[in-house]
Image 1: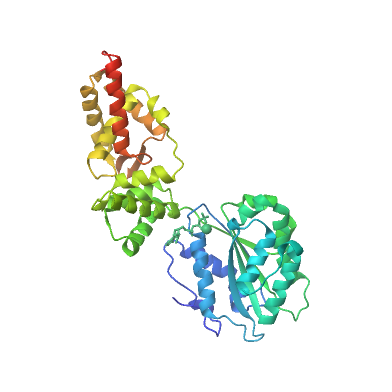
Image 2: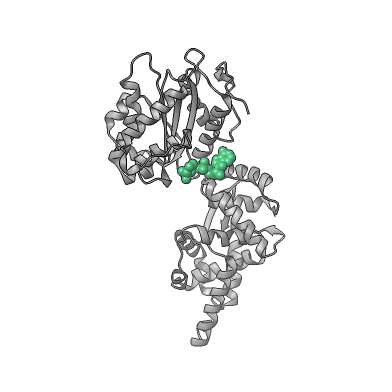
Length: 393
Ligand SMILES: Nc1ncnc2c1ncn2[C@@H]1O[C@H](COP(=O)(O)OP(=O)(O)OP(=O)(O)O)[C@@H](O)[C@H]1O
Ligand SMILES: [Mg+2]
């Protein structure tokens, strides 16, 4: 990893960020002045992007590089520091400032009931002046704090900016800010005028696509997972995590544990399904499956049986009509076989299965529920119906 030398050469501040190089470069461009001349320029940037799109990941690295690079302004001797505050875990702007101070001076103590946010900001400024430091503050997940107390967040942001507006020309510019949120909506709660005074760059993070998630996961597997996992299963995780790398990693790690518990040699798609049922908001209830028409139930059963009996994550679309045909035959329901397409669409509509186009092939997958559980449930239900109604099957 490279960093800015004490001589302040910005051009070597670069690392390889898989699929996030562009965002990192944009961040560096916005902070160019601050990185070159700490204490002189200030900057403010907003990073927006959905969960698991790599915002905190990139900023951790940005902060780390600033720390190891010891960036000092050779004229004023001011050194650049950077702290990250996860606003998600804090319940007020006051505690945010308190936590920032504690990151700079771990021995600092104050009774929060007895002081105001602005007072703490002045204390922080004094500490920085004493230490001859300028600070980049990363407010991660600022949107969660805005939801709790929009007015106070407004004063918090403006409070830090005011140190630059009201100072003498020989005093340093102390505070730059990075605000991180899932989308730009939080700005609507804040006062426009705060944002008019300082140029604020916005860097959007789009979700990773399935191919990128697959590649990031493959790197992660190589580094962190000892158990074997096929490329197909990694693809499966990549597809069902919809570009959310946090979800992808969590699915993989949980599937790894489930696989160990079940003494599987590999991490199987079925382990991933079981992990997924636990961590995603499960959209399908037992009742919904119970209420499905018979054709939908039979197609679900044929898909679930196929997934239960092998370690594949996907079924090729062209294999599906014959699978459906044979299950209709098995249950003596051949007359519904001709509604195959309609039934398949219905299953996709209620998200019981999903259909993907990959390299000119259409593939079907089942992600939210264990195939084995589905088979047990549906076969049991048919047996009961057979008992109750001899004409049903
Ligand atoms: N480009 C990447 N290279 C390697 N790992 C990554 C990359 N992007 C994300 N990750 C990993 O994915 C996980 C989630 O990423 P991260 O925490 O940065 O998401 P986020 O955008 O901050 O999400 P949230 O808005 O929910 O906080 C982390 O473990 C992170 O290390
Ligand atoms: Mg984050």
